[in-house]
Image 1: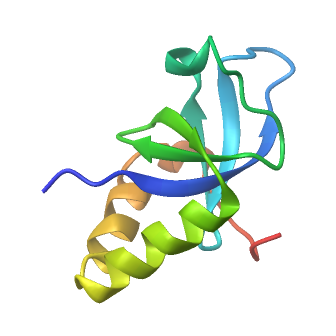
Image 2: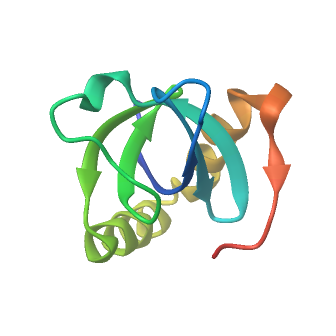
Length: 97
């Protein structure tokens, strides 16, 4: 199953503005923002991510609802496994801010 997972933008790289650090339920990963050139996210924004790419910006309310739906469908662990599967060389485990 393909999963789009909500993530909060923590920071945008100063060296590469197509790279952002995001937080997904306490797991932090770097993702590529290249697909969002027409609607650039900034720190604090929420995005849907898939295989290391931010696909679209969403509201915090939509992000919360998306995670609730994933949990109801029993897919929240699969979503977290996907997040853990990419960007592990730059991973950090931090509390959600």
